[in-house]
Length: 357
Ligand code: CP3
Image (tube, rainbow, N blue to C red; front, side, top):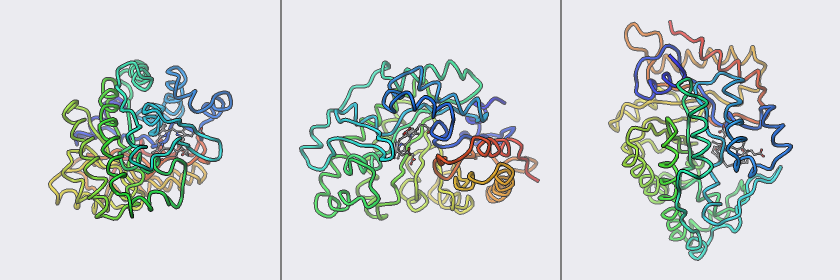
């Protein structure tokens, strides 16, 4: 099987010849090619160039032999398309200027009209050509609530004090922002599906709302995105990643997602059970702890082998099968910048060599 076939088979719960694997944030700061480009260009220059973005996306494919390429881009770029200044400042993280904190701020966000000429779509077309049938090509967007928290804070924030204040006394502004970005994100993903084999939504901040607040505020907007994407491209698999996703399985199980990407500390038997109870046979993605990639390559291989054995046992293989179906191996969240390419390669090789029993 090719990497592309393996990824799509896992997403369809079909048998695979080896477990498919890619890593969230695999195209980025821990790779020497990216670092060299980044010394010459700003982040916004890189995401503005089809040539450079495609080159960055392909670096982990060549260096690590992962089964999928993810388009080089960022979840915050839609704010730029809605008229904000978006910048990524060294040592400070992303800036969204002006931040979105009042009803007027929300109304100022101009819903863009996407077409096949936007850079992310042209980069995906290039990746599709370069990957041919060998690798899956992944498009992505942030989920509405995660995007909203960045827009509200305007910068990296550990305390998320603006969001906290707005949840207390301006919930209608938060709701209006979510309503504003949801159809934008859906349109953005639908354009990406022209060339992407699958799409992933990043709900990186799912864990900062209470269960009731998630149900009340974040869920309706997420539902809008999933519904619109499903209606426009029903064949394209859709994965939802979330920090703390397992705490909202009851809310998301009926959303018609293809797969769930889980935090490192979540057991697969418990996850499958919780999702099955809500009526779905889930495909799971994850969830090796990214911190464990900071060990030396031999140690990474050892820990990865133990992790694979444990998760495979939790999933259980069908009679006679040596590999469990419905699993894409990945990390519990993004690869850390301090990771060495050798450690990342040891992880991917161990996954590809894995057999149960
Ligand atoms: O392989 C890939 O995943 C590359 C494409 C990609 C980037 N960002 C490039 C990037 C993807 C899928 C993202 C997703 C993203 N961006 C998320 C969701 C995943 C997660 O980590 O939870 C979030 C929350 C963002 C927002 C963002 N972008 C932050 C907070 C930062 C600064 C800190 C950091 O993690 O780097 C960015 C910048 C960013 N996005 C970089 C890259 C390679 C680093 C930019 C640099 O070179 O300075």
